[in-house]
Length: 359
Image (cartoon, rainbow, N blue to C red):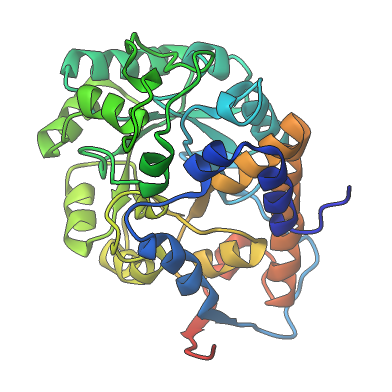
């Protein structure tokens, strides 16, 4: 079947995944207000295209941390990808490698991080802060030794948000899917009515991070440290002062605090607040098209993270499906940039935008 947009792959994934696994992927926390708002906020933003521009030699290439990427895109960290396809993270990482974009390995990956990094390409590693600080820092060292190029430190999960779909389903991991990077025991596999076993597991393993945790990670590695989950301007300024290499403006895809502001609504303000900083400013949450990427860059982002759509492709058609998602984003971004009069991502950052309340 020909997929013309990411919505086509979403439908294909929903058709093949069991209901509770679809809910684990698609759901948010609470009443899912922030989940819905991520899309609504992006849909209200419009760019003001420029005309009569030279478009010969147009390119979507950017640099992340001094190395080329084919698109201003990285694959976001998503846990337990073998839930969606038997090859899981290995297939998704190969798709990212072939598309020329970074792939973010999750702490809760269902394949050992070294095996994912061995696929090649541009691996980054996403870190959750553990109750045992030594275990957290060991993961950082393993990621650096495996060839990862950045540590993406997720700071908005002191514990997992109340994801009601998973609780209603009594969701638990099948025995064939594990947290491959550390011994995690049986908690994530223990099905209990009205509970999410994944949330119970993370409650045992995770601890709230603080600014001292950020300093500990920075002291442990020479890799750039990227803080994921920043929404407040004050936190962004403090992150820059702390010497981080990047910030991901994100409400965790609507999966943590329900009612947290969509990242796209804070992006422009944060970009202005850290103007002159030479780190990467990334947006995560709700990206569903090349046009959305154009909007994010116009508001000051260096690039975006894309998570759920890559998993839709993975579920629908394995590695080839994940590659289709990234290929579609490339086609759509080139089209959107050209129609907006932009021959480069840096030109797209100079576009003006307006927020419309038209429904």
